[in-house]
Every structure is written in structure tokens, then in C-alpha cells.
Image 1 (spheres, rainbow, N blue to C red):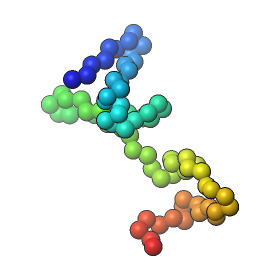
Image 2: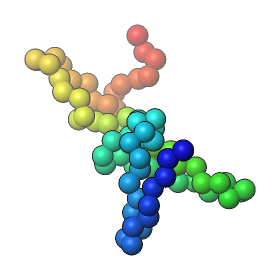
Image 3: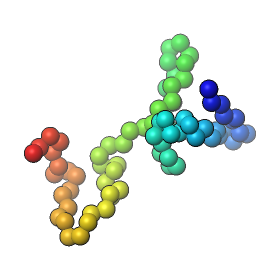
Length: 75
């Protein structure tokens, strides 16, 4: 079990083992959901393809394809 302390500013540091298990790093968004039984679920917010634009570098002179023109599942 891991634990964290709430600061006077309402902040916590997520323990390293939990960050690793969630696959999150600095600046990633975390979503908190309260279930009907009062349980709080914390999960990493997924990103849309459009939010990921520009995160990867192209090598050499490879042509770029706008995200809007890409089709999932196309050969």
C-alpha cells in the first residue's frame, strides 16, 4: 500500500510506484471519479490523436500526413 500527504494547497505527490503502474509522467492529466459507494478511482486521462500531434519527430525528408487525413485501419 502507498500513501501520500495532502499539502495546505490541496496537492499530493503520487508515489513513484503508483506513477509507474499508471504510466504517467510530469504534466500528464489525472482523472478522479467518485463511485456510488464512495470509492475514488484515479486514472490517467487518455489523449486524442489530435492532442498528440507534434509529439513525434519525423526522420529526414519523409512526407508528413495531416492527422485529419489519416484513417484508422487503412492499409
